[in-house]
Image (cartoon, one colour):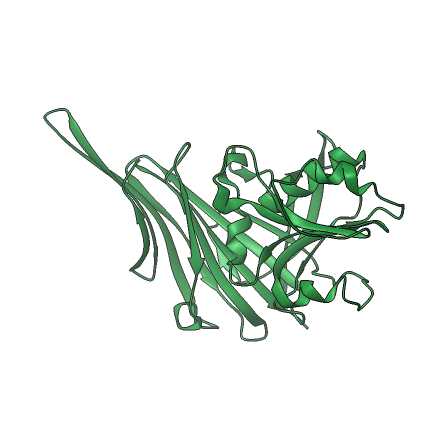
Length: 282
C-alpha cells in the first residue's frame, strides 16, 4: 500500500534567476484537491553560539530564514539596506528591511553578525502565514516569499550568494517541518481542497493568508486547534462573487473553513488563500 505521495515543485531560487526543485513528501490523506503545496522538508536550528548576541532570537523571533556566509561581513555595507536600526554594536546589526511593493507592516527583521551569520525573521506574535507574498504568485505557483526577499536584499548588499539557506521557527523549537497549501478562485465561483491533519503529527501552528487578487492588500491570521481537528477532513474554500446593478458593482472575496467564514475582502471577485502549518513528524 502506498502511504506517501511525492510532489516535485519548481520554486524561484533566491540566489539567481534560475529555478530549483524542492522535493518533499505529502502523506496520503493530508490534503486533497490542492492547487499547490510549498514546503521545506526540514526546519533546522542554526548552530549559533548561546551568548548575549544570539539569545534574543529565542526571545523575540518566530519564523526565520538564515545562512552562514563563513566569512567576515562588512556591517557598514549591510547597514545601507536597513530601513531602521534597532541595535548596533561592533559585531552585529539588528534592524528592519522594507520589501518592494509592500507596506511597512510587512517589513522583515534582520540580524547580521560580523562573523558570517545572517538571519531574516518575523516576530513570534506574527503568524507564519505572513511570509506569503502574493505578488510572486503566478501561474499557480508561489515563486518567492517575504523572508527570501529580505535575505536576497541583504546578501546583494554584502556581495553574497546565499547557499543552503534554511528555515527555522524560534517560537516552536521542536517543530521539524512546515508547509504552505495554496488555492485560488478567479471570477465568480469557488474552489476548495480537503485538509486532514494526521494525529500522528504534532501541529504547533495553523495560520492563513488571503488576498483578493493583484493589487489588493493581504490579510493573515492564526487558526485555533478546534478549527482543524486532527484525523478529520476539513473543507477549505476560496470563494469569489460579484453583483452589478445599473453599472455599479460590488465584489466579495472569501476564505472559509467547514462553512465558517474566516476572512472576507470586498474589493475584487478573486480569492487567493494559503494555509500554513508548522509541525513535528516523527
